Amino acid sequence: MSAESIFAAADTPFSTLLQSLSLSDLQGMSEIFQRTWERSHKEATSPTSPFGSWRIRERGRRLFTPDFLHREYTLEKKTLRKIAEEYDLSAKQVILRAQELKIEIYHGNRPQPIDNDWLRQQYLLRVRTAEEIAQDVGVSTSAILNRLEKLGIPRRPMGVHSRPALTTKIDKSVPLDIRAAVEGTLHGWLRLRRFQICMAFPTARTAATYLGVTQSVLALQFVQLERDIVAQLFQRPGRHRSQRPTSRGTTLLQHLKGSHIQELMRHSLGSNIEPMPGQDVLTAAARTVDGAHAALTTLHPDTPIRHLNVPSPLQPLLHHLLADDDQETYAARIHTATGIPFNTVYKQLKRLEAAGWLTSRLESRAERPGSARRRTYYSLTAATHRLNRTQRSSLASKPIVNMSYHLPSRRKT
Image 1 (cartoon, rainbow, N blue to C red):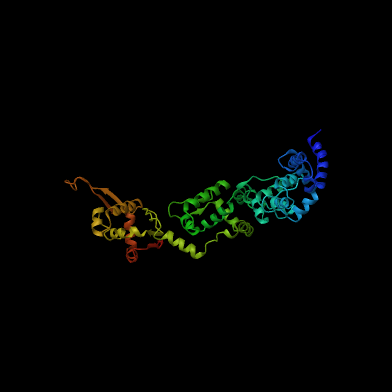
Image 2 (cartoon, helix red, strand yellow):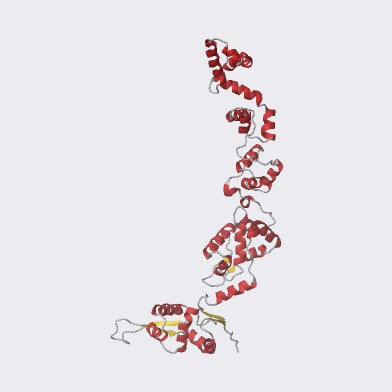
């Protein structure tokens, strides 16, 4: 016979004795019977003995029926530990009985009721993550994942790959380049918006200043954008020179101005969308490019100059050179006459020479026979002489701090 059948057979007379015998009855019996009854009672009621643990389990099975646990645990929302205390049983015994009846046990706060159709719509149609849905409902992410598993809904990859930006497909009516930049990428709309803003500015430096990012960050974003579209979108000019889009970039900018595309962009970026710059901002940026921060204008012998720019650090030296345009000079003489540091004079002379403003020659041994070191003489180029003669009055009247202005064009007579 099995142990449980023996326990069941023994429990019937033992339970009858427990109900019928009183303390006074035991006192009237022999000492041998009292010791035997004490051992039997301890064996039958101890949770560590086989018989005692069986009796406790049987009591729990009779008491904790499916209807009882549904009423106490599910409807009245009592904890299993609370139910165990009320009926003088261990919490482990109640938990084992609930697991035996396949009742869902909640660890922590109970979840809010979730509509299955709503969950399918949020996860499948709106492509929201389990974390986002869990925050809306007020449950843990694992509870949402368990519910999806029960509904037979396949789970998407965890982490960044489940974000809507990486899984959302855009309508075929959207231009191909925009779809290529957005679909399967995390910040595609942000890169498109910044490309649209950057192309409104004369240089990437002024655009980066407006956006509040470094120029290197902006360059990396545009490299990624061109990699997604598989095309070059703008010409990368030299330092401080104006940038301009390629034909492919121009077409992309035209598409980005469309009302439907702007609506999609605003919906994706939300409150984080960066505004397009106003005309006053663009005007100030153009002044920055054409003003003190701009590159030194390069003079060519046969090319007319439409716009002249000399950064402010070079202007004291240039004024000194233009005042004595017929004489050769050298760095030490300029340093003595102007007080500009010798190293600064030397670097600025080299910069003016590279831009076509000056020409240089090395002093011969015959000119200073007793000197161990030969000087480098500088003189104005023909282009600088011509510019100085035609614009002498204009240059003299301009303040040193801002020598940046348009030159009048010549008309053929």
